[in-house]
Image (cartoon, rainbow, N blue to C red; front, top):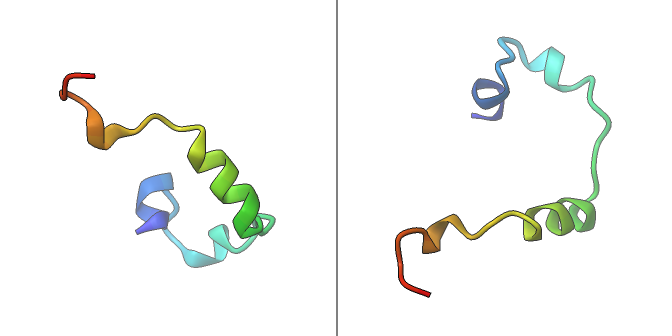
Length: 42
């Protein structure tokens, strides 16, 4: 799934990236807008 989203055809390409710890990922995700609330009144 992730390879499809970023456009990599082979898993070997994705393995070249530096691993990111769970806390850093969570911090980044928390900065994204809540797309589940789109279209709902505030």
